[in-house]
Length: 456
Ligand SMILES: Nc1nc2c(ncn2[C@@H]2O[C@H](COP(=O)(O)OP(=O)(O)OP(=O)(O)O)[C@@H](O)[C@H]2O)c(=O)[nH]1
Ligand SMILES: [Mg+2]
Image (cartoon, protein in one colour):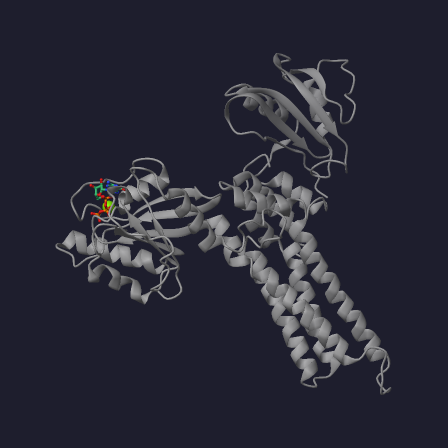
């Protein structure tokens, strides 16, 4: 339990109709009262009350606010909380905050309200992290996953896995209670089967991690192809503004350009690169080297080919070394009417083929949808209903729990004494508890709450 009372402006700075100043801690009500005119009745809990706020020292008017009080433990932080809805803008919110500080509280650190909520058992660690993602999300898919986490979707799933581990432990106890009997009440085979079931459910959850983590970082989509294939034009079309220089001269783009875009609701880092060919000069050579580096780190490649021009051998050669990365064959400039039917031409190592034109806009929606499917296929369509591991911290924990359960099962099958194998179950449980934050070190908390804004 913390004893300090904290305050912060919870809304973003700048002009706005309303701003929220939040106060939390044992002196929250006292701080409020020192801002009210003498004789103002104490506002009732959870009732929006319109009140005049005065400077606690000079008594000069600060603002007229709508005040809502929450009494511990029924508040966001679990402490006494006062929320002052004041006028927005550059002056009022900081002025009211300063008055609160003078009335005896200190300014909150980034994430401190949510940290207190976690420490007071209002949220587990997964939920607390998800609050930051709901606020910070710049794509709908991460927002949906985070919202489901705030609503305990992922916590429940991890909690269920933990419950089942406890269940296996209970079976073990029963098994150990009757060691001499030929036919103990719980046969080893049943315990092995339970453990195997747990393993496969953990694997299913872990399968969401690669895509879930990309929801936060954005998938790297690299535009590549021969010079003049129309890469920069497509880049501009997907970004929605003229970022890259487009000319009819081959070899226009030299440096790689990167932009964050949301395609089909999913986050991408779109990269335009120099056309791939035998370089004609030092600068171009360096540009091509950069292209190659981007290609090797890509989550998806858009290989652009001018529909009217055969791609030179040299340009495609760069793709050979990329095992496993999905490659979309993009036929560009289809408005020029060259006869080709790229659709469905998924043979020859391409993941799929799409024809596009930045002039007519043809094919751009199809391309966006294909990119989303290729990179985020497992998540497309699941919306917020399936729990998704969105952070390395989650997958590290679940993966280590899985490894422990697997070793436990293998040891049982290999004849290792049950009592010894059982320590694995305990470690697995601890790993899941760490994900939920049921057991945590302060340094983990520091990392989690560092990324918050002040006032949350
Ligand atoms: N008609 C038509 N012309 C296009 C289309 N896309 C690109 N172009 C033209 O093709 C030429 C090359 O386009 P860029 O986007 O610069 O091609 P690039 O692949 O980036 O070329 P480099 O940077 O030199 O490798 C320009 O003259 C564009 O106007 C299209 O969809 N339709
Ligand atoms: Mg270019």
